[in-house]
Length: 130
Image (cartoon, rainbow, N blue to C red; front, side, top):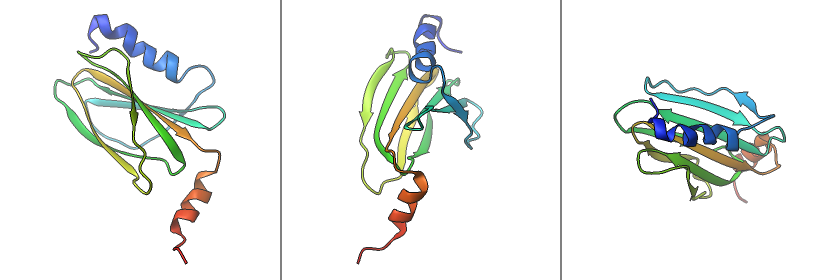
């Protein structure tokens, strides 16, 4: 349950970050109190993941970073924050983000992607240096 005064900010995550034309994509994560939905920008240059913790406990989670990510933004609404924006450091060759989701909160991660297709970046990562 989202705290009633916070409903506006929770809806703002969806209307502002993954609006008209975005395509919903699937993902794999099973946690009873975490509700996750992910959208791809029509130009395929941005991936937006919304994570809602409906429980009364913080939940840790590891997020995998897409290969062609050059910037990650996090927007968070909880008991103390209203659509707070922060940048997440993208470190070369680090593919995961460790984070916690506070009780009754929503976090949205915006992965800004380069125009190089995922498969090309994956193959480039697998080639050993000479």
